[in-house]
Image 1 (cartoon, rainbow, N blue to C red):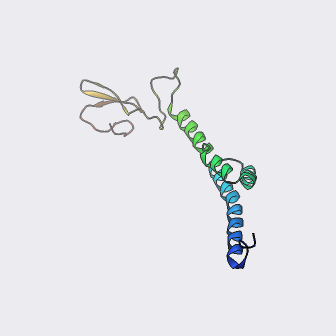
Image 2 (tube, rainbow, N blue to C red):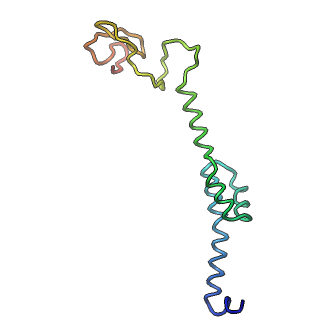
Length: 127
């Protein structure tokens, strides 16, 4: 033990170990904030359990991504009982609903357009 702490190298090693031990909780706290978890809880978990808690929070799913995906799904999926005409701008369905002979019907405004026109005469949306 005397050899380890003799001279300046032992002190430097001790300082590096303390900095590493203190850096893990702050990094774990930052990861928890980025993923939408409680920063205080994960700070103390990383403080006491170190690298194991840091690996756990890094492997945890991102709560913000789940919320965003739920919002996207709610905006793009239409209920089964909705009408055929949907004026929602966020609708991923293409504008051209069907082509009938020399005409096509705009999905956005249900206007019948000439087959040669590339944009709707009612709303201006492109085919």
